[in-house]
Image (cartoon, rainbow, N blue to C red):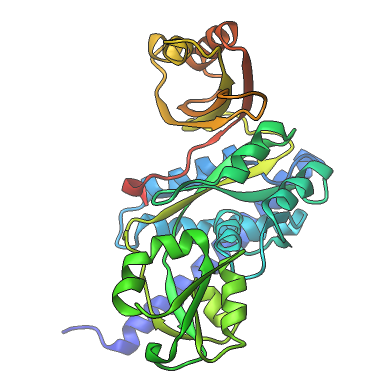
Amino acid sequence: MSESLQDIRRKIDALDARLVKLISARAKIAQQVGKIKNGALVYRPEREAQVLRRVSELNAGPMPSAALRRIYSEIMSACRAMEDQLAVAYLGPQGTYSQEAAIRHFGGSIDTRSCATIDDVFKQVESGATGYGVAPVENSTEGAIGRTLDLLLTTPAKVCGEIMLPVRQNLMSKAKDRAAIKKVYSHTQSLAQCQHWLSRHLPGAERIAVVSNAEAALLASRDAKAGAIASKTAAELYKLNLLARNIQDESSNTTRFLVLAREDAPPSGHDKTSLILSTRNVPGAIHDLLSPLAKNGVSMTRLESRPAKTGLWEYVFYIDIDGHARDAKVAQALAEIERKASFVKNLGSYPAAPTAATR
């Protein structure tokens, strides 16, 4: 005889009671760790990355590993907050994807500080006003965020983490039908990410670029003939109707964010290192500069060039490589690169974000 709904609910209630006890026991142990650390950093990116990877490895389903990691991120966030609430700067205003990325990475038990510009995010970290900052660095559709790259060249801050945020663009408005929309506000990159959808569904609407998607939602909330492209969080925050969901032209659209701090992270076992390099402007120079990576078996996962702003046709190269600067192969490759390069800046080593295959 099959179980009744009431029987099944009793089982869920019993499991919930056990889960609450286990989470409370975990929190008590986390408090003991805090006492042993005696004032040391509350947030340890390498340790939290290890915990989340282990959770994924232990997961036998049916819950997706990404969902389980989010639950554990919130548990760790709440445990951290019992010791000290982290302050994290992000590109505001409220409701931006930068805020969403910060909360996804650190959990909801943090003090998020809205900044008007990416420059201000860096300044908050550099001055010690916040312990951490979250800045967008590249989008899978539209490419690199130039201002972030320029600031990385001069900042004393280090990169201690990365966040891969799937970007789901949505059309929202005070209007109840998109036929009423005469203009659409959004960030330049979001407009570009949705240009084909806009051409098909709102061909006559004026497209107006603004500083952020949250700003777009705010403007749309003041004009019944306006729409905005932004996150669902922004729609809720500014009390707008969601008229169309997931309107980005590329379904895999993802923005990568860097986590900034005053120091990078110790090895976690699955790391990246970010560098800025420069070399002489002669034939074959960049090939010669990067040859130590192949020689030492180190994979390069990203290469981006940017004008150096020090002279005509001079460039710096932003690269990401697999591994931590303390790994033997990486350390050897970096030592050889430093002998060849005219300029080297190690931005930091940090835990690699989960790939699409492990989400």
